[in-house]
Image (cartoon, rainbow, N blue to C red; front, side, top):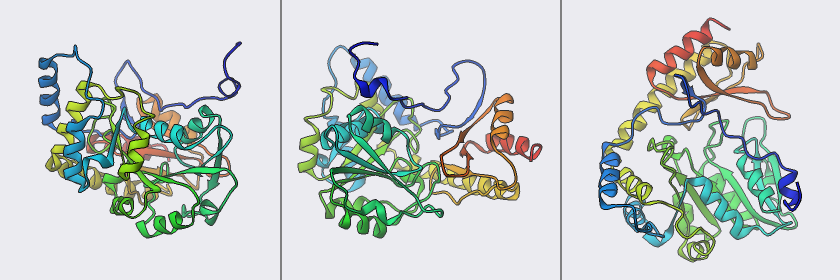
Length: 348
C-alpha cells in the first residue's frame, strides 16, 4: 500500500482480548468488573440525555476533575481526563517521546506500550522483569535518547505490585519522566499518589474500566503536577471525552461507598480463586489486581484455554518469549468462578 508510513506498514498493531458479540459466554479474559456499576451512574447518564447532546462536551471535564480532586486530595488542575487510560497513554507518549527516541517499558507488561512507541516512530526499550517479577536495575539505568518510561503497577499479566519506596528509588535514578499505570490500583494495598506531589517527573494514569465497572464507558485520567498538565492539554484532542461519559464518570467516582463494597467482593473472590488454582497445580501468583496469573508447571496451558473456550468460558492465554506461558483469569462473580474451576478440575 502506497503513502502509508513505513512504521505502520511494518507493525502488527495492538490485539485486544476477545470480545464476542454473539452468544452467551462467561467472560474472564479482559479484566472487566463482573458487577453492574453504581446506580448513580445510570441516573446521571439519563439526566445528561434529557439535557440533550446537541452541544459539545466540556473539553476539560471539570465536573469530574472537581469531584475526583476531592476524592484524591489534589487540586482539579492536577487532573487530565481521557477517553480511557489508553487515550492518556497516547497523549503522554505524543508529548514526551520524539520520533527516533526511546520509550522504556518492563517486560512482560501491557503490550500497548510497544504499539504506542511504534506509532510515534520511536524505539521501545523493553527491560525484562526478574524471575520473581521484581524490577531489574537496568530499568532505571541511563540510556542515550531515553525520554519516557512506563511502569504498570500492579503489573499485568502478573498482578504483582512494587512499593512506593521501590518506585521512588527508580524515579530518583531515571533520567526521564516516569508514568505509573495504576489501572488496577483500586484492588491493591497501596498506590503512588503521594509521589506525584514530590516530583514533577512522576505521572499516574488511572481508569474507571476496572474498579468502577465502566469498561464500556471509556474514561480514564492522569494525575500530575499542574505545569505538566498544562503542556499535555495542548496535545489531547479538543473534546476527547463525550457528554455521557463525563456524567457517568463523575457519578461513579462520587459513589465511594459502592467502590468499597465492590472492592471487597472482588478481593474475596480473588483469594478463593488463587487458593483453588494452587490446589489444581497452577503456580498462581498472589495478585494485587482483579485477575490471577496462572502458569502450570505440570502441563501445557494452551489446551486448557482452548477447552474452556469450547465450553464458552473465556480466559486469556498469554505467551511471552523467554517466559512460561500461562492463563490470566479475571475475577468474575462467585458463580462464574465456580463454573470455571469446575471445568478446570475435570481437565487437570
